[in-house]
Length: 313
Image (cartoon, rainbow, N blue to C red; front, top):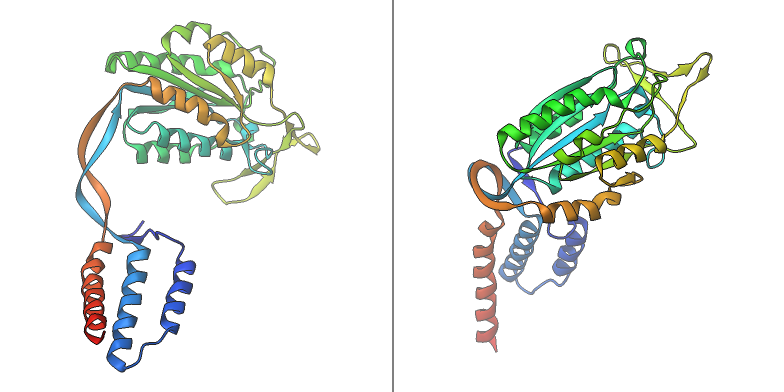
C-alpha cells in the first residue's frame, strides 16, 4: 500500500452516477451553479473516503492469551490442482491460514512446514504482517529432492514448538494441521495422541479430492513450469481421509474437509470464545481518515444555500 489510499463508502461508479444526476439539475445563475458543482465534488470526495498513512497512530487491539500453531504440508502433492476448481491445495491452505490469522489476531503465531523433514519457519510472533509473509513464502522442494511424504515427520518440530509455548506463558495452545493426508513413503501414520493433552483445540484441515489432481511445479531459478510425472504419464495425487481422520482422532480435534474457507468459521468462532482477551494499546503505522476535511466546507456551502433559499422565500 502507498502513503495514500481510498476506501469508498459506496462503490465509486454508483456515486459517479449520482453526482452526474445531481449536476443535471442545473441551477440558474453562474454562482449558484458553481456552488452546486462544489457541493457535488465535496460529496464525491467524502464518499471515496481518502486516507493517509500515519506512522504514529495509537491503536487499540485485543491481546489474546493463546498460542496458535500452523503445521502445514509443503510436499509436492499440495500442488495438486483440485481445490475450489483448479486452484492448488497449497493456495487454498495459504488463504485459509491468512483467514485464521485475521480471525485470531492478537494471538502468538508459529509456523511449521514439513516435506522430507519438518522445519519451524517462525517461532511465536504477534506480528500479523510477518506471519502472513512467512505463510506466503511456503513452497514445495523440487521433485528431484523429494524422498517421499509422511506426516509423522512433523512430530519432532511440533514437540519443540509446544514446549516453546509452555515457556512463554500459560495461554491455551491451538493447533491447525493443514495437509492432504497422503503418505507416499510406504510407512503408516504414527500416532499423534501424545499431543492431545498439550493443546486446547484446533482443526485438522484436509485438502484434495478422491478424483485427484495433477501437479505443476514452478522452477524458481528460470520460472519454467513443468508437470509432475509418474513415469511417462502425469502424476495424480489423492486426498487420504483415513489418515486425516486418524490424525484428528489422535489430537481430539475436529476434522474438516476444506472446500472453501467458510468451512471452518463455526469452529473458529468456538475457539475465539474460549480465548481470554484483554485490551492492549500500541503505536503502529495505520491509515487515518481525511474525509472530515471536506465536511466543514460542505456544511458551509449547504448552510449558505439554505439561508439563500429562506431569504428568497
